[in-house]
Image (cartoon, rainbow, N blue to C red; front, top):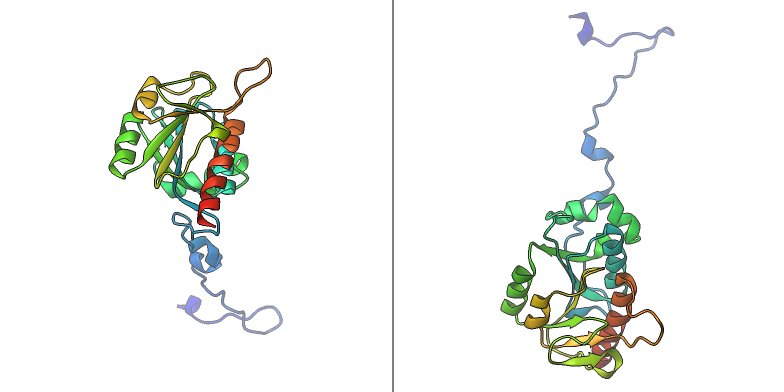
Amino acid sequence: MGGRFPRLNQNGYFRRRKTFRPFFMNLDPSDFSSQSSPKPQPGLCQNLVAVLENPTFIINIGHVIRNVNGLGVEWLYVVDPDHRLEDDPMQLKNRKSLLKHSSAAVKWTQIRRFDTSEDCFEYLEREGFESLVTSPHQKGKNNTVLHEGTYLQPKLAVWFGNESKGISDLAIARSSGCIQIGMYGQVESLNLATTTGIVLHEVTRQRREKLA
């Protein structure tokens, strides 16, 4: 019974009862903001998707996320048969390795993962997207050097292959053409982050100029 009444401290004053503070009152309002559907930014290239086909290294995925966000590509799709990425967008956006390697760009980038290239192509084709693949070699029937091509399709998906194996035969067969970056030295290819940066810079530049 005595515990229900205020107690005096050593100076003869009543002790102040501690106020109960629910945990959610300690959170910052920004913690409740939705990051899964970022607001369109000026210069964002809508209906443009970059596709990574079976990337091996998280660090490369993070670097590509940074390129995609910085260049204003609307979506990044990742064909991920080994489930290196989470399906839950909020888990993905709070993953420490991706936050680090993307310089936090993962928080504001729209990302969707697919189990197979077939699943990704079916989704893109159902939504009316045309696909182009990238390769340092000639692939398929229609090959275009990057700066000689036009990339103003109403809905466009640009595919980038695995770091060591490159783009798959399935992706080549299902796409309408292949983009090549001109190479003039002894090496015949660039790393994934560099390739996505160069190709997407040209694609987004053309699409923004069309809207200007």
